[in-house]
Length: 122
Image 1 (cartoon, one colour):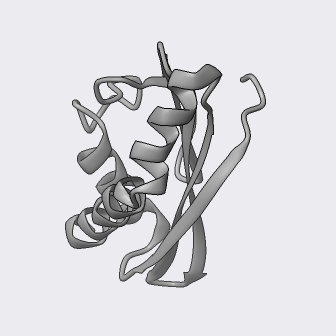
Image 2: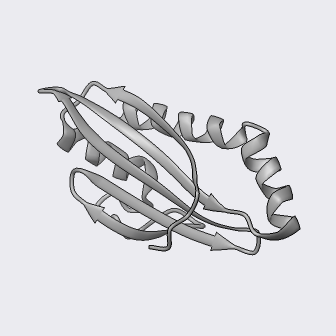
């Protein structure tokens, strides 16, 4: 994967072991929970290391981006799910797009909602 600039990281503790948290992650993020390569629109699977890491990537005219989920055991029935974002926004249109997506706080809201849904599904 091309190295992209770091954007942010959000995390949430989930009341489930790592295997259950992994299944919840796939249920929420993927079109087919049984297939990590069924990434949501705008993304493609970069790598899947069950039950530790799911890396998605994507691009369009205004940016190249990656969203990486990492699952860390915190205890026998507790998992920390982290979502790290990376992106490049080239050119004037990219800078404007970054302001709209990142600067507005919209990205933060979407990622936190995603983590909330993963916790609820676990």
